[in-house]
Length: 382
Ligand SMILES: O=C(O)CCC(=O)C(=O)O
Ligand SMILES: [Fe+2]
Image (tube, rainbow, N blue to C red; front, side, top):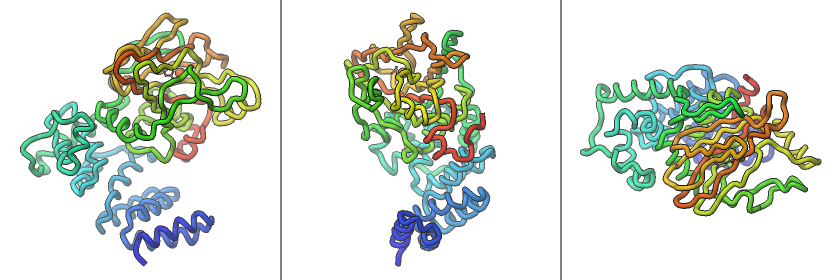
């Protein structure tokens, strides 16, 4: 049997809740160098002991299994309390040199501001030229193509590490006592914004709102944008990094976040004035509240700014926010004593021209389904 057959057998065993059989088959798949088998098994090890998982991933890397170093660094960065070091970024580079696009994207995202003539963009361009066009990075492609020595790479990796370590140190442009409104500048890089839109955009569906009578999701003129729910199966480095940074900016543990909503508004589309707090009453609303309680806070990450109209408006506060790409707006939906903050009433004004993209995170009082699945060890840290 080959690696794929072992992996399929493991999936079958999981479906039949035979975890012993599944682990045995995963082991066989990993021994045969199967990438997904390797990553699944590493996940199992990681739940028990991070260092066992890391040793296993490194062993598989030496056997030539792709994606293993990238997974190791991702687990270390987002699921342990260990700090990333320069060697970890070098590992991402090694993974990228074997053709792992996401590793190169992470390195490009961490270095593009400092190094516009960017070798990582050049490496991506060699592998998938269309991606560079779709990400709007064509002006960054270095020419001529070449391989980079350790000495040439060193300043880039040092700078990437600095960028990583200061990822949540953002300048505040607007700060208001009422509703705890804060607008943080330049949180999400242009590259990360472009990549998330590109990767998740094809899954867009019409947005829904809760029917005030039944609590069920319905289409309604109140909210005419398109949406993708960024559920656990969609997470990647960029989603995890945003979860991490938003935890710092909002002061609430990432495990209390609902899965983010990627919203796309085209001309004429809007989100009419509303509360993000759950304001309906009845059994269906009680059901919605079981996923972590009330929505205490909201964080909106702006992924585009080449549109007119489309401001985020707070009519009771008399403010209109037109953020730049990469900015994050945070505000409270509840008062100190836990009531709905009436001033938090807000809208996404109709877009006039161009396309507005945002990622909305609604944050609850306690751990959500998303938080429990993605961050089982980080539940309720704050
Ligand atoms: O699009 C906007 O500016 C606001 C989005 C919003 O209010 C929400 O998603 O809850
Ligand atoms: Fe909202």
